Image (cartoon, rainbow, N blue to C red):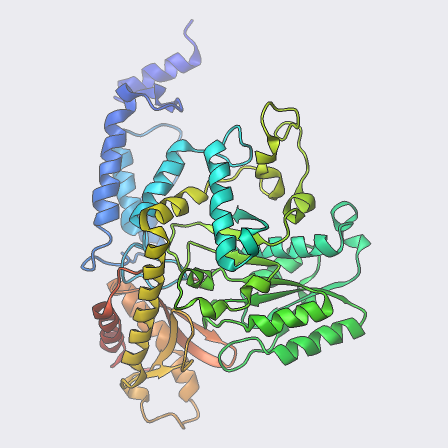
Length: 511
Ligand code: ABU
């Protein structure tokens, strides 16, 4: 009597589909043609086809259209290689074209050619970076890359430790965890019941992750105290000290300040030197969230923005942001050598056996809260090899030059109003004022009407696919655009394109 699996094979062969293709191994006879055609599709239609300025940034479709265009439901039976290639094309077609030069919507953009190949190599090798025995090259590569990043931060000889994390939010969470363990090591065994009421401090314009992770880690988001900012979006150091003192007087235990080097919306850099002085005075851990602005450390011309970062206890730096590494590539760097390991290790015997035949100090996975972990280092290392530090410096200098050029273009152009006169990073914030609102600034409903402009322009740009730029309100400010530059393939002509495109889409809208 044939086994069930043989029956299934026979049944599917009737339909012309080889049912043995469920086996998870690439075999030249079965997969070579498919893989080569898939790679060809990726190279031609995704990589090169989607980075042309003449193509659309997005093929907008409502959910029902995408559901109709792509059979999203997993099915009982397999489909053919030709059908799979068709699905690939459909997925690409309806996905946002983040490689497009006019995708300037988020704090990441472009698909760097070397980063992409590095990522493909990572995926083909499919490592999980927890032990040296399964990821020898990546373990050593992480050590070198993270050390070089610590040198750029300014810690003597690159001293300390570091890890690649799944995103900047988690890196900011590691800062909370490490700071807490540093001051209260009993937290690891006894939990939050054994420590005083902890408070941490960050600016009202900081990334929400510090608040979120404070909640996640049992500190409570109300104990993440938000500090006022000035008109540039920088933390108000006097308010910071006042709030720390207030916390102490109320019997709380302040332990951490998270300063930001490149805030998410305004791109503001907090004044790190006076913040570090306060941290020293009150014996607090200083973490710098440089997820966005960290890339500026690679430029002699712009690294002054992060003056004082060398005084930090820890730093978040996401190469997938300003340095344009592919998603995702986030790091947490720490000046204290052993805190990550001592604060997080669990010594699972099935992974981190101490009696292995090699130097098990290279089994670095136990200092992470993750177990399985992608090798996000390779794409960044590969980019660094391909471009050199000099290439990254040119990249950063180009971004800042483009941002300044764009700023000067809109500064005196009718219809454009700057939110921040002198933005520090490569995000520029502005309102676009259509003709119907010009001269109405003193009317009572002006702000309400201006608030409606950005969503309307956004809808037009998305439906045409001509560019993608995000907008948001912030505090008392009604909706404004934030255009973000981190693709160094853009030039001044592109900056003029953006300005003209805002005028074309927005000039005559009615609100
Ligand atoms: N850290 C995520 C930032 C999201 C964005 O504004 O692009």
